[in-house]
Length: 88
Image: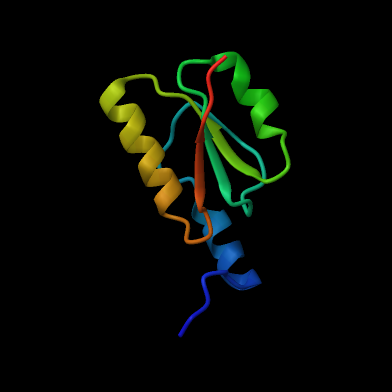
């Protein structure tokens, strides 16, 4: 049985091809397990991306595409385990 945590080679491969959907977001640590959706708070993107353990921070620009892009960018990485929602 394969463990849930990726080895170093798997992490390098993911980092080279991630995020898969372009959008307005900030990248923190690509190997981190947390993704954050700042809902409609553009001013939170940069500060949240600088927090240790955060891989990506984005916002929802439209109800349908925003959620779709978040889900695709979060679920394509096996070690991305958490999605936090934040609003100022």
